Each structure stands twice: as C-alpha cells, then as structure tokens.
Image 1 (tube, rainbow, N blue to C red):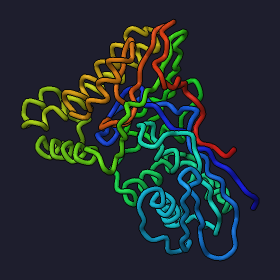
Image 2 (tube, rainbow, N blue to C red; image 1 turned 45 degrees about the horizontal axis):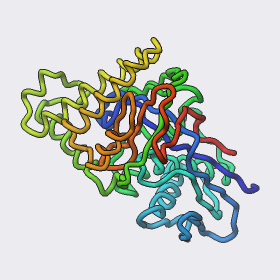
Image 3 (cartoon, one colour; image 1 turned 90 degrees about the vertical axis):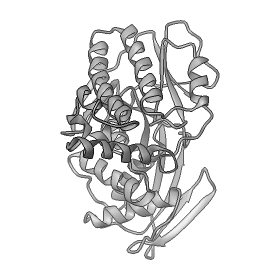
Length: 339
C-alpha cells in the first residue's frame, strides 16, 4: 500500500448548540478548512506520528497503544478503537497538519478524528463502512473515552456526512440526516476568533452535560428531547435554565430550516441572536471576550459556536458590510475524504 492522505474538515454549527447529547436537533455544515493526515506504511510493529504544526512526535506499539494526553490521545485512541472494531491496521508513519485553529470552536478535534480514521483504514487496505454514521460513533468514542471530552455526535457527523452547498439537519434521537440548502445570496457568514481558547475537556462542557442528566433524572425522562416548557417549572436552578435552552434551541433549528427554505435572511439573523441569548443567559456558556466580539461584529445576527466557553463567533453580515479584522468567510464544503 502506497502513501495516502485524508482530509477532515472543520465545521460550523449554524444553530443547535448543546442539543446533540440531549437527543435534539442541530444544523451544522463542514467548511473548507481542516486537518490533513498523511499515512505511509512502515516496518516493525509501531505507529509513528508527527504533529507537524506543533513540532512534536509520538511512537507506540500498534497492539498496545496505551494512554496519552493532548493530540497523542486522539492518535492512540483511534488506533485502539479501530482495532477493537475488527479492522486490521498496519504499522505506519502519520504526519498531521492543518489550517484550522485549535480551540477556535470549529471542531479541530473531529476534523483530526475523521482524517485519522480514513487514513489509517486506507493504509491498511480496509474499506470504510457503507454508513458513515458508524465511523462518527467510533470517532466519538475516541473523544469520550480517550481524550476525556463528553461530546455528542454533532461534530463527527458534520465532518463525515456533510454535503457541499448544504447544512446538515441532524436528529440525534434517530440519527436521521437531512441536507438543507444553504444559499445566502449576497449575505456572508463569517467566523471571528474571540481571543479565548475553547477546549471541551477543560471547560464547563462536561459540567453542562452532567446538569442535563440531572434534569432528566428529576423529570423521569430519557433525554431532554422528551421535555416540554411546562417541565422547566419543575426543575430547580440552574437545571431549569439548562433545560429551557435545549427545548427552545430545538425549536430554533426547525425555524431556521424553514427560514432558509423561504430565503428569509432577516429571520436567519434573528434566530442566531436568539440562540446566542439562550446560550448566554440560560446555559451560562459565554465569556466577556465573546460578548465583546459580538458587539463589535456589525452583524445582522451573531452567536457563539463550538459549545461556548470561548472560541469563535458566527456572524451573518448584510451585503456590503465590511468583514471585521481577522474574520473568516465560511461556506458549506465537502465531507472528510481521501485526497
């Protein structure tokens, strides 16, 4: 088997934040920035990995990856999960590089997972499963079990299953995937770095997941997808606000789908603002830097992305509005693939 390359895209979540692990709805899309993994077959019994952008390396036995931290946890976890799933991996050299800022809330983690997964399978001559939802679940196990971030499937599904020119409506209760055309005309979606780094495993993300589980336990339901606004009044602070965000955010996903179908970009902007207000006030996941970034964006509508606690802001700019300094225009691109 010759050298192969796989590209995993980052993603922007148009709307539907903190709903994935609550059995809810979301509307993400892959972008044209991401992570590339080059894999070259090697002799011996080891995996050799190089994080080119960091100038760091790692080596470990293929059949005994062991635990690690940082980017190494993704590589070792992916090898272990693919092996555990019955794929016959082979020793190889991996080179990891990308153009997606870590901690910006654009899912560099899922981009890395998707690229690693496809590159390792291709190097071993293994065919990926027909349904990429299975790969998304495997990637999520890496992040949950090896990296220590209790994320849902949103990022992995967006990176692996998106379509160019479309957002991807995901129903996390059924894993139904529905492409939604994303045509903004002369309007522009941009991401703006708030200047504060977002990191799932070290932020309030896991705490919010625990609070949502507590809310479900008190209500006697399996997930907040089954909750109603009337249920919110039965919950103590802050569980009531956490549940209210999830319930109303699911409603906003369907409203956004309708607004895009009607090409009502004023409604799209208003929904972005409403999502941010809910994340800020009910989910307590904003930061002063994020708020300042939104205030200075000059946007028709804007919200934090990537789960909050720092990272990037997504802003919708009207025609003719000058992009803020450092803003990155984002459009829906292709899914992870061999290149």
